[in-house]
Image 1 (cartoon, rainbow, N blue to C red):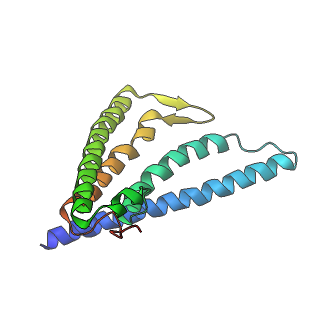
Image 2: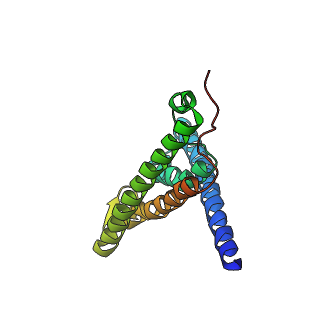
Length: 169
């Protein structure tokens, strides 16, 4: 049992760490864009890498924060349909949703692992103002989709629900 608790603690640490990294990246790109605009408006040449850095960071922010956001029920969903259903139907709809989301995450996990390995073996680069190994663009995808699959599994087999369970009047 201690091994399971240790594994759960490590997973929670990773989940929170990725969310913190995502927030840090958001702060860094905010600063970078503001600095870029100020530098340009005072007549100097801004760093050439800002735009590419912001584009890569937006991908990473989205991916890294997703599992944490799902854990804390921060994803967008339409509450009206669930809220109008009775408790029994609400549970059935939730289970169907979890299964579909879990299946989607597993398919995306499979293909993202394939893309990451393919780009690793090919050694390609995304060439912009700086060269980014193409595999590095795909690397967070398998991690994220695996963690999202874990979170949907937690909702599927656990007592907690992604939905608030409040009826809509």
